[in-house]
Image (cartoon, rainbow, N blue to C red; front, side, top):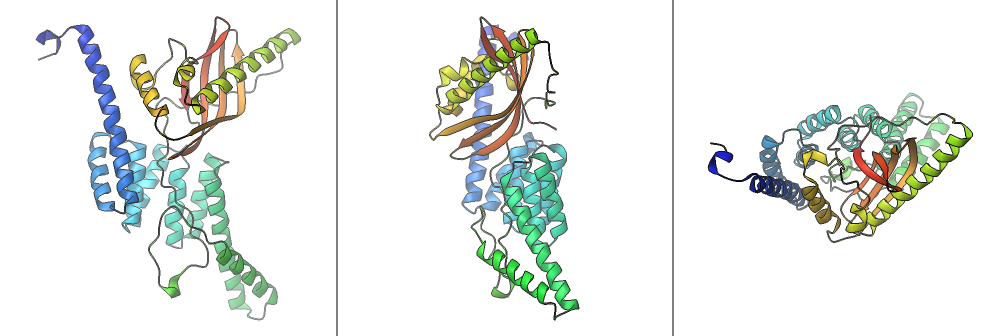
Length: 344
């Protein structure tokens, strides 16, 4: 029997739909936060059980799958974890974190070439991903150590190889640092001489809208058009700086004022439900820092497309991603009408 046949008016049904979306959103966030908390507490089996139940309803959810991979890694089930992270790289090739954690597992298994390949993919996806660059350096050091060891096996009197090997081992032993996960303690004879690659424990943020293509750099225009374009570019840059500043200052009203009334909300949410969700996320305890860099703008009359690198920092999350926003000029003000996160 449908809701309409029970006599529920359309307005009540619309309100009910909004409430259901909000409750579902809270339940989604609560489940992942609880699973992450259990992992940090070392309760990996409980976290895995919770994530498996969650994934029955949302089998493609990247954040839940990522957390599941971490739980499996900590439970000393590396082969199962590899399957999880490999499938994430297939479904979400724009995310660097699954590649990084694959490399961590490969390094633990002494499959250094595979680890190198995974890290190179992470860097190809996000060239500014510092963790992957550092881990790749550790892998190169390990491979160099193996090569010098082999050289000395073939010629034990090779003084050059001896000095280089000593230098690398000294570098590796003095560069040991704390990772974001606590690996199982090896015996004294098994302890590595290089810091293990750093795994990522924060789930990656996944775009909820279709992936955008990079915006091409506009061709040189006539002087009049070039002047107008320069003005528009400056205005759009100023508008986006104000949007990022309001977000960083947790000034929700100012942040929302940068969105057009007909902004395309993600996931088909109503404007009211989307604003409520944004308000709750932004006003959570803790600081937020949002920075924009590498801005590229293409303007056509009163519409524009801006692509930039968004660096987001909070107490619990650090994400660098490519964002593309569509803007429209109304009453002399550039407003966001659509947002896309990620690029291929």
